[in-house]
Length: 191
Image 1: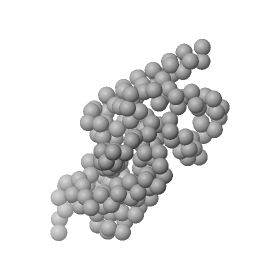
Image 2 (image 1 turned 180 degrees about the vertical axis):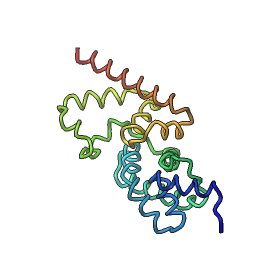
Image 3 (image 1 turned 135 degrees about the horizontal axis):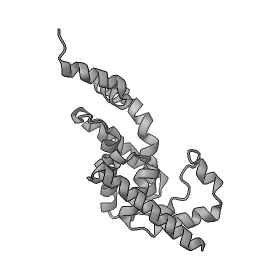
Image 4 (image 1 turned 90 degrees about the vertical axis):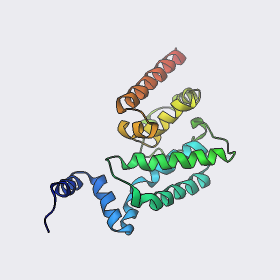
């Protein structure tokens, strides 16, 4: 049986894009979804924990995200940004949680996020960390969400753009402007 040029191109791109290969493998073998889970579970958990501030609830919501993703997985069409699709589900789970009359916690309330992966935080003194948290806490919610998506969830700009429904360049500009504004505020606070 001859393969079309499109099928050959898709197979070649699967080899070049580990995420696409991971998705294709999971579509062929549902047990391979565990690889997706292992790759994204910590990011999703940290993101949800930054919203709810409660480990048990964040774990429960993380499970719900992956169950929803598994339920919808057969209809997923890979277009290069699986993480954006997964985090869109996570955002919807968080919004559902919030609508159920739960109060969202500000980013500042999540003081004990794991920092093993953040060697920069280990070098900052405690006072600087508290000042940064206060500055982030004072941001509008939409700016806090940018911080969550970029630095807590560790998404790239293309993924952030897909989640927020804007262009990649716009997402990048928003993050960089926000960081510049935070830096200026920190300089003013430090005198």
